[in-house]
Image (tube, rainbow, N blue to C red; front, side, top):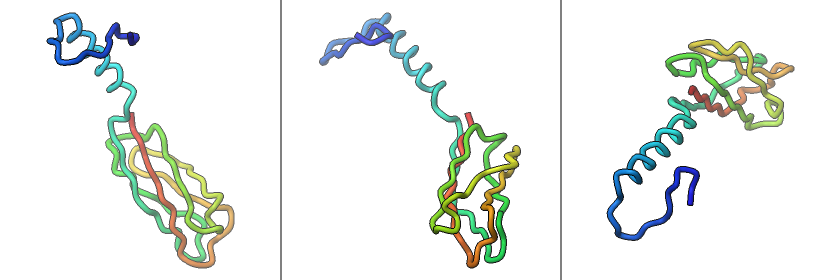
Length: 107
């Protein structure tokens, strides 16, 4: 039995009470999921230590995740998160164009 008082069924008909529990469970699960997701690859150009990224969400992201693809960007971090952009940075300017994968979620 789940916390919504549901158990596994075979081919039996769902009762109105069970249907209401299913709707409640789906509503709760939907409220846990991000409403918007966007992702991409940002390029920190040679000689630079940051890049501004347009995330494309309808508002301020709840979470922004980044992953560098080279040792020069292994300690990449995010700052200045706004309703339209965020900044991806490293502490030292890169010696060649370096790529950073990003994922932005908005709840």
